[in-house]
Length: 365
View 1: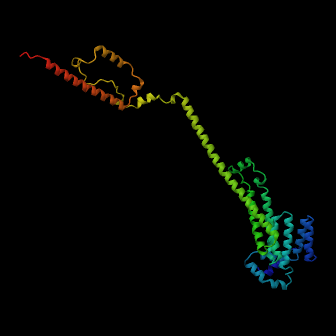
View 2: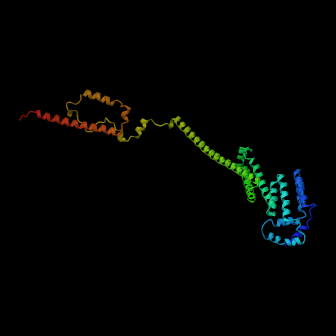
View 3: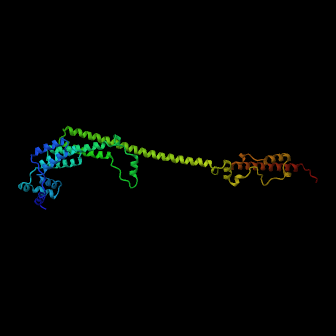
Protein backbone atom coordinates (compact mmCIF):
# COMPACT_ATOMS: atom_id res chain seq x y z
CA UNK A 1 0.00 0.00 0.00
CA UNK A 2 1.44 3.39 -1.01
CA UNK A 3 1.55 6.30 1.48
CA UNK A 4 -1.04 8.31 -0.52
CA UNK A 5 -3.53 5.43 -0.46
CA UNK A 6 -3.03 4.96 3.27
CA UNK A 7 -3.58 8.66 3.89
CA UNK A 8 -6.73 8.63 1.77
CA UNK A 9 -8.16 5.74 3.78
CA UNK A 10 -7.28 7.54 7.01
CA UNK A 11 -8.97 10.80 5.95
CA UNK A 12 -12.07 8.85 4.90
CA UNK A 13 -12.80 8.13 8.54
CA UNK A 14 -15.03 10.50 10.54
CA UNK A 15 -12.97 13.59 11.40
CA UNK A 16 -12.46 14.60 15.01
CA UNK A 17 -13.33 18.13 16.18
CA UNK A 18 -10.41 20.48 15.56
CA UNK A 19 -8.95 23.26 17.65
CA UNK A 20 -9.90 26.56 16.07
CA UNK A 21 -7.23 28.68 17.72
CA UNK A 22 -3.51 28.81 17.34
CA UNK A 23 -1.07 26.21 18.64
CA UNK A 24 0.16 28.55 21.37
CA UNK A 25 -3.42 29.22 22.53
CA UNK A 26 -4.13 25.52 22.61
CA UNK A 27 -1.06 24.74 24.69
CA UNK A 28 -1.94 27.52 27.10
CA UNK A 29 -5.44 26.08 27.49
CA UNK A 30 -3.97 22.64 28.21
CA UNK A 31 -1.83 24.05 31.00
CA UNK A 32 -4.75 26.01 32.50
CA UNK A 33 -7.02 22.97 32.62
CA UNK A 34 -4.23 20.81 34.08
CA UNK A 35 -3.58 23.34 36.85
CA UNK A 36 -7.33 23.39 37.56
CA UNK A 37 -7.22 19.60 38.18
CA UNK A 38 -9.21 18.88 34.99
CA UNK A 39 -6.98 16.34 33.25
CA UNK A 40 -9.69 14.87 31.00
CA UNK A 41 -10.57 18.28 29.55
CA UNK A 42 -6.90 19.10 29.09
CA UNK A 43 -6.33 15.83 27.22
CA UNK A 44 -9.34 16.58 25.03
CA UNK A 45 -7.69 19.85 23.97
CA UNK A 46 -4.50 17.98 23.03
CA UNK A 47 -6.62 15.65 20.89
CA UNK A 48 -8.14 18.70 19.19
CA UNK A 49 -4.71 20.13 18.58
CA UNK A 50 -3.67 16.90 16.90
CA UNK A 51 -6.96 16.50 15.04
CA UNK A 52 -6.17 18.81 12.13
CA UNK A 53 -3.01 16.85 11.88
CA UNK A 54 -4.49 13.36 11.81
CA UNK A 55 -2.15 12.89 8.97
CA UNK A 56 0.63 13.94 11.31
CA UNK A 57 -0.52 11.37 13.84
CA UNK A 58 -0.50 8.67 11.18
CA UNK A 59 2.92 9.83 10.05
CA UNK A 60 4.17 9.71 13.62
CA UNK A 61 3.02 6.12 14.07
CA UNK A 62 4.47 5.12 10.70
CA UNK A 63 7.89 6.55 11.51
CA UNK A 64 8.03 5.50 15.15
CA UNK A 65 10.26 2.49 14.37
CA UNK A 66 13.06 2.05 11.83
CA UNK A 67 12.14 0.07 8.72
CA UNK A 68 10.88 0.27 5.19
CA UNK A 69 7.72 2.10 6.22
CA UNK A 70 9.62 4.89 7.92
CA UNK A 71 11.97 5.28 4.95
CA UNK A 72 9.08 5.42 2.50
CA UNK A 73 7.05 7.99 4.47
CA UNK A 74 10.03 10.27 5.02
CA UNK A 75 10.84 10.12 1.32
CA UNK A 76 7.25 11.14 0.52
CA UNK A 77 7.23 14.25 2.74
CA UNK A 78 7.65 16.66 -0.22
CA UNK A 79 4.62 15.06 -1.87
CA UNK A 80 2.54 15.41 1.31
CA UNK A 81 3.57 19.06 1.63
CA UNK A 82 2.60 19.71 -1.99
CA UNK A 83 -0.95 18.44 -1.43
CA UNK A 84 -1.29 20.36 1.86
CA UNK A 85 -1.23 17.41 4.26
CA UNK A 86 1.80 18.48 6.31
CA UNK A 87 -0.10 20.95 8.49
CA UNK A 88 1.96 20.36 11.70
CA UNK A 89 5.72 20.25 11.88
CA UNK A 90 7.50 17.55 13.95
CA UNK A 91 8.45 20.22 16.50
CA UNK A 92 4.80 21.25 16.87
CA UNK A 93 3.70 17.65 17.37
CA UNK A 94 6.51 17.16 19.87
CA UNK A 95 5.29 20.17 21.87
CA UNK A 96 1.74 18.79 21.96
CA UNK A 97 2.92 15.36 23.14
CA UNK A 98 5.09 16.99 25.75
CA UNK A 99 2.10 18.94 27.10
CA UNK A 100 0.02 15.77 27.02
CA UNK A 101 2.67 13.89 29.01
CA UNK A 102 2.73 16.59 31.68
CA UNK A 103 -1.06 16.37 32.10
CA UNK A 104 -0.90 12.56 32.41
CA UNK A 105 1.98 12.73 34.90
CA UNK A 106 0.09 15.15 37.15
CA UNK A 107 -2.90 12.80 36.99
CA UNK A 108 -0.66 9.93 38.24
CA UNK A 109 -1.05 8.09 34.93
CA UNK A 110 2.67 7.69 34.58
CA UNK A 111 2.76 4.79 32.13
CA UNK A 112 0.75 6.85 29.62
CA UNK A 113 2.86 9.90 30.44
CA UNK A 114 6.03 7.95 29.59
CA UNK A 115 4.61 7.12 26.17
CA UNK A 116 3.84 10.79 25.51
CA UNK A 117 7.31 11.88 26.65
CA UNK A 118 8.96 9.23 24.47
CA UNK A 119 7.04 10.50 21.43
CA UNK A 120 8.00 14.10 22.23
CA UNK A 121 11.67 13.17 22.54
CA UNK A 122 11.59 11.23 19.28
CA UNK A 123 9.94 14.08 17.34
CA UNK A 124 11.87 16.95 18.86
CA UNK A 125 15.23 17.79 17.42
CA UNK A 126 18.23 18.97 19.45
CA UNK A 127 17.18 21.68 21.86
CA UNK A 128 15.25 22.49 25.02
CA UNK A 129 12.16 20.47 24.15
CA UNK A 130 14.16 17.24 23.82
CA UNK A 131 15.97 17.96 27.09
CA UNK A 132 12.67 18.61 28.87
CA UNK A 133 11.18 15.36 27.59
CA UNK A 134 14.26 13.45 28.75
CA UNK A 135 14.14 15.08 32.18
CA UNK A 136 10.42 14.31 32.52
CA UNK A 137 11.07 10.65 31.72
CA UNK A 138 13.58 10.57 34.57
CA UNK A 139 11.16 12.36 36.87
CA UNK A 140 8.31 9.87 36.29
CA UNK A 141 10.69 6.96 36.91
CA UNK A 142 11.93 8.60 40.10
CA UNK A 143 8.36 9.09 41.28
CA UNK A 144 7.62 5.40 40.67
CA UNK A 145 10.71 4.48 42.66
CA UNK A 146 9.62 6.63 45.60
CA UNK A 147 6.20 4.98 45.68
CA UNK A 148 7.68 1.48 45.61
CA UNK A 149 10.21 2.47 48.27
CA UNK A 150 7.39 3.45 50.63
CA UNK A 151 6.10 -0.14 50.44
CA UNK A 152 9.36 -1.73 51.64
CA UNK A 153 8.81 -3.21 55.16
CA UNK A 154 12.26 -2.16 56.40
CA UNK A 155 11.40 1.46 55.58
CA UNK A 156 8.01 1.52 57.26
CA UNK A 157 6.01 -0.24 54.60
CA UNK A 158 3.41 -2.93 55.35
CA UNK A 159 4.96 -6.17 56.56
CA UNK A 160 4.04 -9.36 54.75
CA UNK A 161 1.71 -11.59 56.76
CA UNK A 162 3.28 -14.98 57.60
CA UNK A 163 0.02 -16.80 56.83
CA UNK A 164 -0.18 -15.22 53.38
CA UNK A 165 3.46 -16.08 52.65
CA UNK A 166 2.92 -19.71 53.71
CA UNK A 167 -0.22 -19.95 51.59
CA UNK A 168 1.59 -18.64 48.55
CA UNK A 169 4.34 -21.23 48.97
CA UNK A 170 1.84 -24.09 49.01
CA UNK A 171 1.49 -26.18 45.82
CA UNK A 172 -1.00 -24.66 43.41
CA UNK A 173 -1.07 -21.33 45.25
CA UNK A 174 -0.88 -18.09 43.24
CA UNK A 175 2.53 -16.54 42.72
CA UNK A 176 3.77 -14.15 45.38
CA UNK A 177 3.48 -10.43 44.57
CA UNK A 178 6.65 -8.75 43.31
CA UNK A 179 9.06 -7.46 45.90
CA UNK A 180 8.70 -3.66 46.22
CA UNK A 181 12.45 -3.44 46.77
CA UNK A 182 13.11 -4.90 43.31
CA UNK A 183 10.47 -2.67 41.71
CA UNK A 184 11.98 0.39 43.38
CA UNK A 185 15.49 -0.53 42.24
CA UNK A 186 14.34 -0.96 38.62
CA UNK A 187 12.56 2.41 38.69
CA UNK A 188 15.59 4.19 40.18
CA UNK A 189 17.85 2.69 37.52
CA UNK A 190 15.56 3.98 34.76
CA UNK A 191 15.51 7.40 36.39
CA UNK A 192 19.28 7.49 36.63
CA UNK A 193 19.63 6.58 32.97
CA UNK A 194 17.43 9.49 31.85
CA UNK A 195 18.97 11.99 34.26
CA UNK A 196 22.49 11.05 33.15
CA UNK A 197 21.43 11.54 29.54
CA UNK A 198 20.08 14.95 30.48
CA UNK A 199 23.30 15.87 32.28
CA UNK A 200 25.41 14.96 29.25
CA UNK A 201 23.60 17.73 27.36
CA UNK A 202 23.90 20.27 30.17
CA UNK A 203 25.73 19.21 33.34
CA UNK A 204 25.08 22.59 34.99
CA UNK A 205 21.35 21.93 35.43
CA UNK A 206 20.90 21.93 39.21
CA UNK A 207 17.62 19.99 39.27
CA UNK A 208 19.09 17.17 37.23
CA UNK A 209 22.21 16.97 39.40
CA UNK A 210 20.14 16.95 42.59
CA UNK A 211 17.96 14.14 41.25
CA UNK A 212 21.01 12.10 40.26
CA UNK A 213 22.39 12.41 43.79
CA UNK A 214 19.02 11.38 45.24
CA UNK A 215 18.83 8.33 42.98
CA UNK A 216 22.35 7.28 43.96
CA UNK A 217 21.46 7.62 47.63
CA UNK A 218 18.32 5.52 47.17
CA UNK A 219 20.22 2.78 45.34
CA UNK A 220 22.81 2.58 48.12
CA UNK A 221 20.01 2.35 50.67
CA UNK A 222 18.38 -0.51 48.81
CA UNK A 223 21.72 -2.29 48.53
CA UNK A 224 22.16 -2.14 52.32
CA UNK A 225 18.66 -3.52 52.88
CA UNK A 226 19.32 -6.37 50.45
CA UNK A 227 22.60 -7.17 52.21
CA UNK A 228 20.89 -7.32 55.62
CA UNK A 229 18.20 -9.57 54.21
CA UNK A 230 20.79 -12.01 52.92
CA UNK A 231 22.59 -12.02 56.28
CA UNK A 232 19.32 -12.62 58.13
CA UNK A 233 18.46 -15.44 55.76
CA UNK A 234 21.81 -17.12 56.38
CA UNK A 235 21.40 -16.67 60.15
CA UNK A 236 17.91 -18.17 60.04
CA UNK A 237 19.18 -21.16 58.09
CA UNK A 238 22.01 -21.65 60.61
CA UNK A 239 19.59 -21.33 63.55
CA UNK A 240 17.34 -23.89 61.95
CA UNK A 241 20.24 -26.33 61.55
CA UNK A 242 21.31 -25.75 65.16
CA UNK A 243 17.78 -26.36 66.40
CA UNK A 244 17.53 -29.57 64.40
CA UNK A 245 20.83 -30.74 65.91
CA UNK A 246 19.60 -29.91 69.42
CA UNK A 247 16.39 -31.82 68.82
CA UNK A 248 18.35 -34.83 67.58
CA UNK A 249 20.71 -34.71 70.57
CA UNK A 250 17.78 -34.52 72.97
CA UNK A 251 16.12 -37.44 71.22
CA UNK A 252 19.30 -39.52 71.52
CA UNK A 253 19.69 -38.63 75.22
CA UNK A 254 16.07 -39.55 75.93
CA UNK A 255 16.63 -42.91 74.25
CA UNK A 256 19.74 -43.53 76.38
CA UNK A 257 17.83 -42.68 79.57
CA UNK A 258 15.05 -45.02 78.52
CA UNK A 259 17.53 -47.84 77.90
CA UNK A 260 19.08 -47.34 81.35
CA UNK A 261 15.67 -47.70 82.99
CA UNK A 262 14.93 -50.92 81.05
CA UNK A 263 16.42 -53.87 83.06
CA UNK A 264 16.67 -56.06 79.95
CA UNK A 265 19.02 -53.55 78.30
CA UNK A 266 21.26 -52.92 81.28
CA UNK A 267 24.89 -53.90 80.89
CA UNK A 268 26.31 -56.95 82.69
CA UNK A 269 28.51 -56.42 85.75
CA UNK A 270 32.15 -55.89 85.03
CA UNK A 271 33.26 -59.11 86.71
CA UNK A 272 30.83 -61.16 84.59
CA UNK A 273 32.14 -59.46 81.47
CA UNK A 274 35.68 -60.44 82.47
CA UNK A 275 34.60 -64.04 82.92
CA UNK A 276 32.92 -64.12 79.53
CA UNK A 277 35.94 -62.59 77.84
CA UNK A 278 38.45 -65.00 79.37
CA UNK A 279 39.72 -67.85 77.28
CA UNK A 280 39.54 -71.43 78.59
CA UNK A 281 43.24 -71.52 79.46
CA UNK A 282 42.88 -68.25 81.41
CA UNK A 283 40.18 -69.71 83.65
CA UNK A 284 42.50 -72.36 85.06
CA UNK A 285 42.80 -72.18 88.83
CA UNK A 286 46.17 -70.95 90.05
CA UNK A 287 46.33 -73.53 92.87
CA UNK A 288 45.89 -76.55 90.60
CA UNK A 289 48.39 -79.23 91.51
CA UNK A 290 50.89 -80.59 88.98
CA UNK A 291 50.23 -83.97 87.46
CA UNK A 292 53.57 -85.43 88.57
CA UNK A 293 52.95 -84.94 92.33
CA UNK A 294 55.20 -87.09 94.49
CA UNK A 295 53.96 -89.72 96.88
CA UNK A 296 53.98 -88.97 100.61
CA UNK A 297 56.68 -91.58 101.35
CA UNK A 298 59.06 -90.03 98.88
CA UNK A 299 58.72 -86.55 100.34
CA UNK A 300 61.61 -85.15 102.32
CA UNK A 301 61.53 -85.02 106.08
CA UNK A 302 61.18 -81.30 106.18
CA UNK A 303 57.82 -81.39 104.38
CA UNK A 304 54.82 -80.04 106.41
CA UNK A 305 52.92 -82.44 108.64
CA UNK A 306 49.51 -83.91 107.90
CA UNK A 307 47.79 -81.42 110.19
CA UNK A 308 49.46 -78.54 108.44
CA UNK A 309 48.44 -79.98 105.12
CA UNK A 310 44.84 -80.30 106.25
CA UNK A 311 44.83 -76.69 107.41
CA UNK A 312 46.31 -75.64 104.10
CA UNK A 313 43.76 -77.71 102.17
CA UNK A 314 40.93 -76.11 104.15
CA UNK A 315 42.24 -72.67 103.36
CA UNK A 316 42.57 -73.51 99.69
CA UNK A 317 39.10 -75.07 99.69
CA UNK A 318 37.63 -71.78 100.88
CA UNK A 319 36.23 -69.46 98.16
CA UNK A 320 38.91 -67.25 96.70
CA UNK A 321 38.39 -63.50 96.69
CA UNK A 322 36.92 -61.94 93.64
CA UNK A 323 40.32 -60.44 92.93
CA UNK A 324 41.82 -63.94 92.34
CA UNK A 325 39.05 -64.84 89.95
CA UNK A 326 40.01 -61.89 87.80
CA UNK A 327 43.67 -62.91 87.39
CA UNK A 328 45.15 -62.14 84.07
CA UNK A 329 46.91 -64.61 81.84
CA UNK A 330 50.33 -63.24 82.81
CA UNK A 331 49.60 -63.66 86.52
CA UNK A 332 48.43 -67.26 86.01
CA UNK A 333 51.58 -68.12 84.08
CA UNK A 334 53.74 -66.49 86.74
CA UNK A 335 52.08 -68.64 89.42
CA UNK A 336 52.63 -71.79 87.34
CA UNK A 337 56.30 -70.90 86.91
CA UNK A 338 56.64 -70.46 90.67
CA UNK A 339 55.07 -73.88 91.27
CA UNK A 340 57.43 -75.41 88.75
CA UNK A 341 60.44 -73.88 90.49
CA UNK A 342 59.24 -75.28 93.82
CA UNK A 343 58.79 -78.66 92.21
CA UNK A 344 62.41 -78.56 91.00
CA UNK A 345 63.59 -77.60 94.47
CA UNK A 346 61.60 -80.53 95.93
CA UNK A 347 63.31 -82.92 93.54
CA UNK A 348 66.73 -81.65 94.55
CA UNK A 349 65.95 -82.10 98.26
CA UNK A 350 64.69 -85.62 97.61
CA UNK A 351 67.90 -86.53 95.79
CA UNK A 352 70.02 -85.17 98.64
CA UNK A 353 68.00 -87.18 101.15
CA UNK A 354 68.51 -90.40 99.21
CA UNK A 355 72.26 -89.87 98.92
CA UNK A 356 72.56 -89.18 102.64
CA UNK A 357 70.70 -92.40 103.48
CA UNK A 358 72.94 -94.47 101.26
CA UNK A 359 76.04 -93.04 102.94
CA UNK A 360 74.87 -94.10 106.44
CA UNK A 361 74.02 -97.69 105.53
CA UNK A 362 76.73 -100.14 106.84
CA UNK A 363 78.09 -102.85 104.61
CA UNK A 364 77.58 -106.39 105.98
CA UNK A 365 79.88 -108.15 103.59
